[in-house]
Length: 154
Image 1 (cartoon, helix red, strand yellow):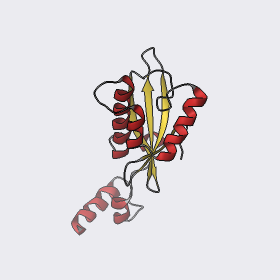
Image 2 (cartoon, one colour; image 1 turned 90 degrees about the vertical axis):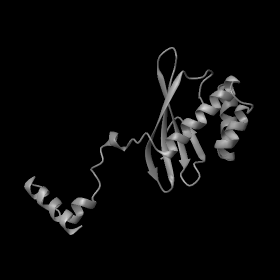
Image 3 (cartoon, helix red, strand yellow; image 1 turned 180 degrees about the vertical axis):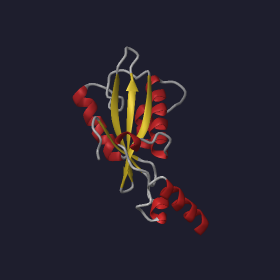
Image 4 (cartoon, helix red, strand yellow; image 1 turned 90 degrees about the horizontal axis):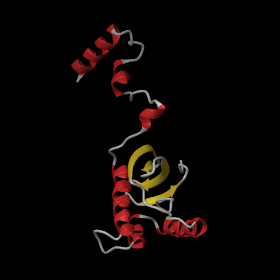
């Protein structure tokens, strides 16, 4: 290990980066750029994709016996389900898709992780063109979806 650290320190010194101790250079994370915070292949992002696929199947009546409500109960917190019911009554649209129809496709990316929760941006793509972002908050311990909305929760 000491040899690897010495080698790393020598490489950094040659590159003009010897201002920091060798151990700090090895242990320090890469600098974070705003766009670099996005992580696509995470358990939280995958959970959102799994939920959306099951929910779409239930809405379209294909592939399973579960209703959209049953799918929501399986993946979402009870309070979020209550809030989505209220949203649907106010907006006369599907509370998960945030529209009156089903998106043609979507992608999910984990953008942030904080205090045991992940923020996942779901981008819905519509068959007529255009896209819309829906933000999910996923508890990491059990991957339960705790929030979704038009703006990130954190």
